[in-house]
Structures are given as structure tokens and as C-alpha cells.
Length: 513
Ligand code: BG6
Image (cartoon, rainbow, N blue to C red; front, side, top):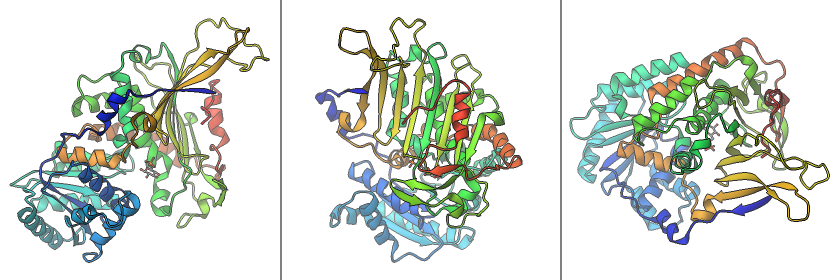
């Protein structure tokens, strides 16, 4: 297929590197669960990148909190993380300067004395670093510790400090069904006001996800056709080629639907489907998203397909099946793949199906949204089988979230020559070549926003409950009807055959990626 690239005007390239004026107030980021992978791989590299860009206040500090006694090694370990995962260079003195702002406190999350010590440490940091009593608590812990930590922060006066402000970031999974999500929301809101709560979904920090809103609402030409009159259907794919990466105990309880569909995929769907908000303020944007989720019809089980990977080949390597993974039940019925057909009951989308699929150990790592437009009412041109392209293809707009972030539009063009043959060609916008920069890891933007108190890119309790309300009945139905054919797809393929049937019975097919 021919490709036409879209280039950005050179004078506008500078905009991408212009310094931002969004610098938060002085403060301390306190990371609970700091001994886990997330801190070293994502959070510290993200904070360091913010520092490099001049986006952190001068009066700033980080405190890692975890059960193990890592006081002597923590800072060094974080430095390694910045070098290994954040592209930092060995011997770079700015890393050392940054690491001086890192402290550590070992404590059990249910132990009062630990919180007394933590409070004293934070007060000492305020004096030394001028952080003014402002705190951002980041709960990067297993969900069973959320309540304990939140309760104790409340009890020890750290949720509503006399001086400065307190905010809390809560990592997913936010509940495992509707009831548990409601309970957790109630517990959180007993201690923190909703304006202090930042439920993180790292997909919302991705540039390409935010660009969906810019694409739709900063351009005049797409919105008039962004509806049931012109769009045939939408597909959202969140495919990964990795397996569960040693996270057996977590994944056994989660599965693909809880792990990525209820949150990441639904966030993508809401950005594609929402009405224009009245402003880009947190409440307007989040309000429109909730309306989308609430407009989705209950999902009948026949509109769902689940799968589990068997052994196979990924990137030329033989990989084991899910049931053979470490700390996974050899008879596990946990799904590593889910495909769904969703239908919305609102004026914009009635009759336009949204097909979703997400899974591990698939053929490629690709997250993308594909919008297929309706064919023209009358096809004037010959579809002769002996032409170079034997079928006139519908227009397709593809929003590539990762990798190779960008947007492309497929349309038909006349093949040069005496006959009127039509072949698909693609107009292609790629972030990397257009702006000359790679988009940042989502955590940078989200940490910055939380420090600024901007909740636009964080989940509201209503949103979390709306998506759980939709998926809890599916999960319950799946528990009742045990899958008999697991494992039902080979690693390195595009998932179970039944997923082709789900979309195929509507006369459609999954977009070839
Ligand atoms: C996480 C899931 O939330 O998202 C993982 O727990 C998944 O299982 C990851 O691999 C995918 O994130 P990304 O940014 O690599 O698409």
C-alpha cells in the first residue's frame, strides 16, 4: 500500500521543545511500595525527566516507603533505575544531585509507629528542603494495603495537614468488581475529599491518547463525520506479545478483562466516543466520559470471547503456555485474551458497534484504534478481479497509540494508467518524524498533573464504578460458564478463532495489523 507522510512545518517544531510554565508548588512525593518494580522502572525515571526539563520545583524531595529495610541501598538502586530505564547516563552529575533528594523509610503499613516516624521525617524534610508541608502520597502497593495506608494517613493527620496540601495517587487495580470498587471509594472518600484523589491509569498519560481529543476537537473536519451517519464501526486493539512476566499470583486473580479492558481500553473508548466537553476542565471531561460508559448496553455473553495462550513462538523464540507459567494453576481458567462487542444507546453511536480485543502473547505489541467509515452510497468504479486491487476498500482512520505513535487515513486513489483502477493509499502522520521527539512515558505527565492538582487525566469515582457496573456481570457469567477449551490460542497468533467469529458474524473482520 502506498504511503504519504505528513510533515510538520519546521517553524512549529520548536513548539515541541518549548519550556512549559507548569511548575508545581514545592512538595514531597511519598511513594508507598517503593521497593517494587514500578518505582525503579517508571516513577523515578519519570521524576528525573521532569527535573531535567525544569518541571519540578527547586524545593522538592522524594521519600520511598516499604516494609524492607533498604535505607542504605534505596537511593543507589533508584540511580541505577534512572540509568537503566530512564536513559540516564553513567557519570551524569545531575543524576547524583537529583538522588540527593531521595530518602527512605522502612515501615509496616499497618503499624502506627511507622506513620509517626514518617510524619517526623516529612517535617524534617520540610525544614531542610523548604517543601512547605505539601505531600503527594503515591500508593504503588498491592490493593490489599490501600485501606490500611489511607486509614493511617487520616489518623495521623497527614490527609488534611495544617500547613500545605495532601493528595493521594492510587494505582490500579481499583477494585476487582463493582462492589469492591464502591467499598474502596467509600473508604478513600472517608479520609480524602474527591479533589485530593488521583486514580491513575497510565494510558491517560500517553501523548497519543491525549491527542485523540486534540484530533477530534481542535480540527474542524472530523467532528461532523464522527457519528453513526458516517462511521461503520470502531475497533480497539490492545495487543501485547509479552506474557505475564512473572506476575502469576496477580494475573491469576485479574485476567485480561480486569487487567486492561475495564481500565485502559475503556479509557480509549471514552476518548473516541465522548461528546465535546464544555471545557477542558477535569469535571467537564470526566463527566462526558462517564456518560459514554453509562450509555453502553449490558453486554450479553454471546458478545464476549475469552482466550488463554498455549505455548508457541513469539519473535522467533519458543515460549511456554500460560498454565506452565510460574505460580499459575496448571488448570487455570484465567483469561489472557478478551474480545467484546459493545453497543451504545445514544444519538451519536446507536447502531455503530465497538469491537474490543486485548491479550497477552499475541503476534505483536500494538495498541490502536481503528475507525472504519461507511462506503459511498454508490460505487461507480469497476471492481474487476484482474485490476491491481480487486476490491474498493472503505476509508479507515487508524490512531496508533503505540508503538510507532501516529495517525493514518486510508483512502482510495486512481492507479496511473488508461484504466480506472482504484487502490488504497495511506496518509500517515508519525509523531517521531513529525515532531522529532519520542513521546514521554505516561507517568511523567500524570505525576506532574497530580503535583499541580489537575485531575483531568485521572479517573473519578463515578467513572470507575460505571466501568465496573458494565463488566461485573460479564465476569460473573464467565465464572458460571467455565471455559472448556482453554488454552485456545497459540502464543504468537492473533488469539482464539472464536474472536474472528464474533466480528465475522456481523460481516466484518479484525483490522489486519
Ligand atoms: C498494565 C497491565 O496496567 O498495563 C499490564 O497490568 C500491561 O499487564 C500494561 O502489560 C500495558 O501497558 P503498556 O503501557 O505497555 O501498554
